[in-house]
Length: 499
Image 1: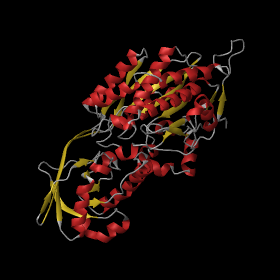
Image 2: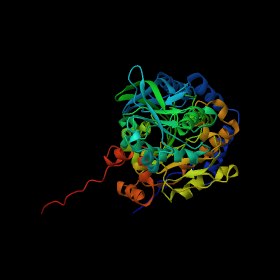
Image 3: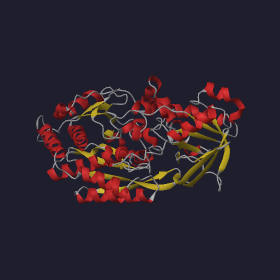
Image 4: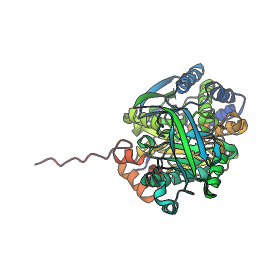
């Protein structure tokens, strides 16, 4: 099994501009440019303040597509809007609750969880029942009382990215147990400090049939204390949602065509969509602005990569990474030539390395590409598969893929929250990250080596030796892989020809 493809100039050709030293100097010119005065930070401000939160399917998301196309084209970078299919529309119109008991009535702020079911017109009233952390023991403790009730689930205060992944993992079990117990809906105690509201996807996505809410932390804590003190409470929820079936959304793809290997492609990706409570600076406007500026500076400096570089601004990421999945389907005939697909999606914290997603031969290639920016390190590569952003469908299709590993900074507490605004990003760190991604991209666009695309069997082997399967289930994408709707199809078996 050959895992590395060596590409050399054809006999008789002049040596490529990628000869040792030349491409490294070009990378240093590029990184110096993005570290200087460029429109990157102003682009971020414009996206966050003027377009704002941009959930896929919303009018603001459509404005974001136009915004991105204008930025690419103004920089002289060819760009197109590529359509893909979203499986279901979900947007919150309004959400409110009232908690009542003997001598008690208050109305804490709430946010509907993406893919929550709407309530009937006039609202839905049911007993409110505290179930601790929602463990098996907690549901066993409350027994039949959970049937027909809203269950209130306690959470830890979120401090970092590790806590965020723990939230996602725990929610799968909590919501399954609530459904099995016959609960009418789930109310999570908000995990963000300062009573910030946020969106946290229902684990079963569009299959969900129950109202699901996040309640501001102080209000949920008050309700929990009352319940534990013996005060019976009811909760009336009124959720007005805009929902529907499949529809078309668009990614924005900017491209700098390769000079000597244009059929080979390096994809640099960040998702353009965000949830709508805040302006989506950390998640993921900052990295959208970064990729646009990298394209702008490559064009301005006249840098010409050997391989084609595509700057992909994905939509539908928050609902299940559907924009990048749509790209993989639309470009399936080109995937054998995709040398690398990068996702940058952990806000504005310093890039300290890359997840290489279960492809050990990627590690030395990454380290070679980062050599021109070694002084911005140290960088450590982590060779484990990670699910939760737009590398997924490239990984499932066998394409070498990376995720920028970033320090948490302010990302965790502000994730999907009302507080995810322009001020959360440190401009100096954002520019430093742009230099790192620029060097990485330039290295992969010009190095002789590239990894061969993996077969489905090789992807399945990765699932057997890591926790990739569990991660995919927690992000509600496993069923699509198992059904063959995502990922590289199994190789067709050719029957021997009869003699």
